[in-house]
Image (tube, rainbow over all chains, first blue to last red; front, side, top):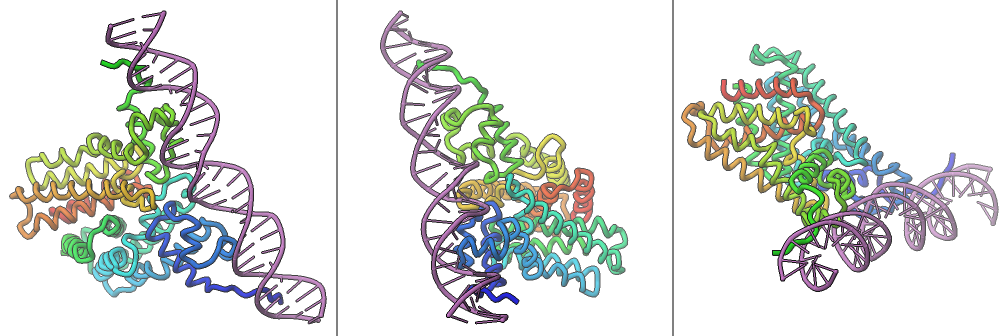
Amino acid sequence: MPGGRPRSFDADSALDRALEVFWRHGYEGTSLTDLTTAMGINKPSLYAAFGNKEELFAKVLARYLDGPGGYTADALDAPTGREVVEQLIHGAVDLTAGENTPPGCLCVNSVHACGPDAHTVRQDAITVRRAGEAALRRRLEQATDLPSHYDPAALAALVHTISDGIAVQAAAGRSHDELRQIGDLALRALLG
Amino acid sequence: MPGGRPRSFDADSALDRALEVFWRHGYEGTSLTDLTTAMGINKPSLYAAFGNKEELFAKVLARYLDGPGGYTADALDAPTGREVVEQLIHGAVDLTAGENTPPGCLCVNSVHACGPDAHTVRQDAITVRRAGEAALRRRLEQATDLPSHYDPAALAALVHTISDGIAVQAAAGRSHDELRQIGDLALRALLG
DNA sequence: TTAGTTGTGTACCTATCGGTATGAAACTAG
DNA sequence: CTAGTTTCATACCGATAGGTACACAACTAA
């Protein structure tokens, strides 16, 4: 088995640095120089380890979903439909207006990367979004505690939409406290 | 009074072309070449007539608010608070998922232009958004038909948030019909 | 020690970015 | 017609974008 010179950096923590940069400055607003500086490596190392900018972003997006965005999957395990929705809304507020992370949501930001070089990235984000909403719909179909007039698919779409709105508000600079109030009001309107 | 060579283009319709391009491809995703091609003029003419890219965008944003985005101001003239909110939600759906315009909302898109050169543009969009929500809050303070448990400021923020969510969904490719259903469900939840 | 393999650092590539210098063209006022 | 003024078209500017060639360093296996 081949040996070779060992890496001078940790791939996972380098991905975390890249995540922070993409999250804060967007796909199009982030240059390779921004990335290599933040990751502490230089371009050939980046390309050897992660492919090109697009592929790096795809890896970063996956890591985002597993890490900060993981609350969306966790919420589906809540015992009641009501709690699922509550955790999703509160989780969106905490994620997008958290103190130690950039404002907004990487996935929502990336939908708005619509320049010519960002086509693949935008599609990646849209695919992830669709999958998330489909999972929520299936979970809500199992719930028995929600007001009977709600169609699960429609409710899933609305919760997703409100979550998107929260991300935009956070990206536009709203504080965590304000967003929490907005989220609570939405929950009261939705679930009584 | 000075004469000089007359313009070979109409400034207002050139602004409309620029609006379409910025709306569809974002501030950062739009190059000067994209703009001059769409506007049918060349760079020196663009700079002479509209300043630089930032200033052009500011003029485009103003035109957007007067034109396609004008429904937000019109809605405030509706006779009841309920109708104000209805017109805002339905208007957001029609604007962001309209057939003859790019998907999404220029103002929401621009909040997500967070590269180093887009700082001014982002601030412009945020300023406009704040002003719009403040106007809505003042209008809702005048309303007497809304459920009494609603604080006008909180309701204005929530309506704004839902409107933002609709814009994101449209940018991510949802159809007008789906968005209309989402909007109607939101209105039922909010206003009964 | 030596061959083979893999990562690192520098220096560079082409394309495009936003923006401009310059001179000819098209107009008005006298 | 001429002088003055404004716009238009071409050609160009320095800076930076994403991406890579190449030589060297650091490791494993024999």
